[in-house]
Length: 422
Ligand SMILES: [Ca+2]
Ligand SMILES: [Ca+2]
Ligand SMILES: [Ca+2]
Image 1 (spheres, rainbow, N blue to C red):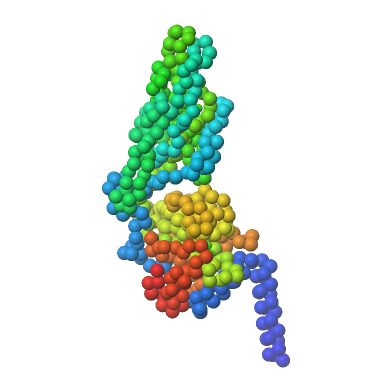
Image 2: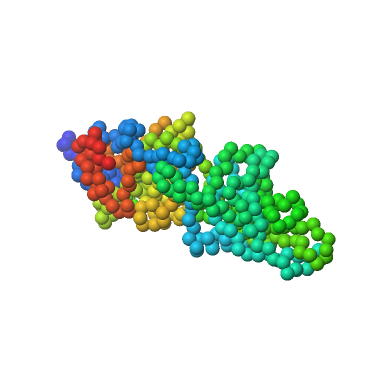
């Protein structure tokens, strides 16, 4: 009799518990299913001492990612710049954003004291010059040929953005550390933001006219695929009295006479660990679902600040690192998998997190799945959905099983937590 009661009570408790899970906690369900699949994947229970790399000091094995020795002094202080290399179609799309055709006021300030400026496009169109009476003359002016100095405001002064002259910057620099060639990039350092407004941060001097100090702001900023661009509209005036002489090249409000990209220059960070994560999706082919590339980022914790360098986003679920959605950081749509071979290739994105963390494992990585929020975990002795690896780790391409690419992974997980598996 006693036994029956006990059995009944146990059944009731179990029933209550599981119905609670199903009804109120889809997150727990997802985690439970993931953990089961993970254990099957690695072939057994997780070793109780397994801490998933987050207890390791990788400083002796970390490889410098695209940053080793530098011939140019920039790269000793700053994260490397990169050229965006727009396709012809992308450039056409970008130009379209600058072709306003009607009076337009810039609304953006580029809020950085240190930034790179990259040559994108030298305008090709010409504008007719008008005489004193406002009649068109036979003279037409290709604005970009006359925009001889690009300038950026530094507090109360303007500074020439070196090498940007006559609508272009054709300088090339080769990074002696990794051989990367930088085309048309200049670093603006320690630019004071005091007194900067949305209409005075950038400008150009021109060489055709004589009026207005030959200096015009005439720019707008637009964002395109996660990058900021500045486009300039040519304008020039001469002080002449002959009524038939060419005098005024007026604005057409198309800001395509010169287009540059501006991007923040970020102080070099001491990346200490790389985090690779699984977004808890597994289906028909369980092995290849464990590619651990759904999010890949380096971490630097310095002076009470937490910085990440986002390297890959090989999933299509919304995935947040400390509240920042990874596809948005890359400037792509959520359905794009980035830098894993099945979608766009993008440059790494370096950002400071809004919150500070004492270690990489504490940085919350959250995925939205089946309407629930699930955090990636690396609890000791339990299945992990995020793992710490050395900086420079080669993450898996899309749907490449991590234990296929790294055959010691499963042994490390289940038997030998001290194994160097990567
Ligand atoms: Ca124009
Ligand atoms: Ca995956
Ligand atoms: Ca993936």
